[in-house]
Image (tube, rainbow, N blue to C red):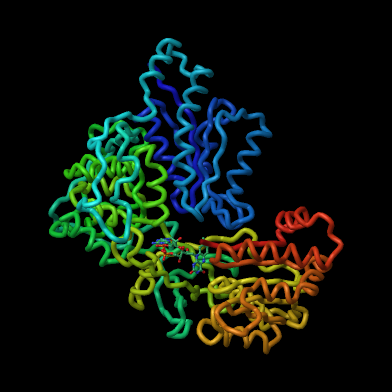
Length: 621
Ligand code: FAD
């Protein structure tokens, strides 16, 4: 019998959409006997003819300010823009929608949308395939039979059908993950089907282990040449600055671009994981990965993000995202590696359909890592193959470049906030942000793999006299330092470039001007030499200072700003990591425009600013 198939295209920048598409492909073949032909979107022409396809599903992210592809995050006014544009285009071309699209939000966690969306997706896909009867060799009877056989999810009896008592041995003061909920009363839980292994993974004692930076033509090698703390010792959130020197001359970037950094997990955390799994004595053994002889997955591939002949320690440190929250399919596999009956039951609850809310609340929202889960379930002893195959790859992080290539193309600078998360709410150990912690710890001279993320629109305008309104609290000031430096260096090197023609406005925000005013001296220098015309600083933790947030300064200068925007075609740039700031700034700009102009439909006007690329965002969560 010929199998049903559909086309599954993905567009991925950091690997998240790719992983989602591949996961869907595996579920399609394993649980529904449907073949998903998976293609990267920019390869489509080479692989098939769209007009001859009956069903197409697309998983794509958006990058920058709604460009293809990268993160989908509601902080952007053009949230999931790439997906939405594709969606609209398919409709315009006459495609029929068989299931509603969903817009997953990286600001709150992609799984919060994807999990429920997938539950409805498979029945809709099967119904459509049945209607289209795309399989020429399969009779209707067979189809109906196979649909009936293909249970979406597996109904199982719980291993333990009783409430965990309040004296149960997992009781802990700080979390609820191991407490039983009202689900313990439930006799039937709907578990996700068990994922099958497509890889065969062994550890071999070998003297040939090669642990070194992988060579990837998409990445450039750079050297860490400087790291400095930009904030005072008393600052609540320290900010560091980094300078890298690319090895090759041809490393190209422009102001407004970001840099992608390949980072590594924390050594202590890797050790904790190795100890917990009792793999410490085999950490230096070579990881031998091949496709399993029993493999049935069409998408099965040896992961390219794990170099061949590397050690287990290397893979856990450099290749696998050990900090990620385990997905439900992994929790499902954990059930079978757990000996304690109460723990088994609780794991079943956490990965069941009925336990979706508790999974979201206790695992996703609290960002519990794989090690947290293993610490909560001490009798769970997964094997190496399980973690290597089912944990996602460690993805690079982005940082906005704050230097100008006019200064020195062999010097790339960026800044980052140090992130610390306490051992609370189910988190069983204190931790730091993965990449920022790694950047804090590596020694000067360390080689780092980097790549430029070219910004499509977050750029200086071509004309000098266009007013620039730059709004960047905290590390959000980074690209504006790049802009100002670029303008300053341009004024020194380009004939006829007169700084007096510039109309540059910078709105900066910190907690306390004495503690965390980033780039204070440099900004003052730009003011003195007339590159920066207007500086407005907000300080959220200074008593008696009237401007707490950048929005307060924007409001105080509303009349003049509205004039610049409405009458002088100013470009507004907003950059930073503060979710509420992005929304509040937009509302404040809309407010000052309303107060100080004759615009009647302010919503439409704000949208027109965005579509004409005069309201530009570079933000992150
Ligand atoms: P991670 O380990 O990835 O953790 C970071 C995030 O995960 C947290 O913000 C939080 O949302 C979540 N999280 C993880 N664990 C917990 C927990 N236990 N409790 C609560 N939340 C948790 N950053 C800068 O500092 N400077 C920049 O100039 C900059 N520019 C950027 C430009 C772009 C285009 C983008 C997309 C991002 C930029 N970022 C910047 C963000 C940066 O890429 C990283 O996301 C950031 O440095 C954190 O990375 P990390 O690996 O240290 O932290």
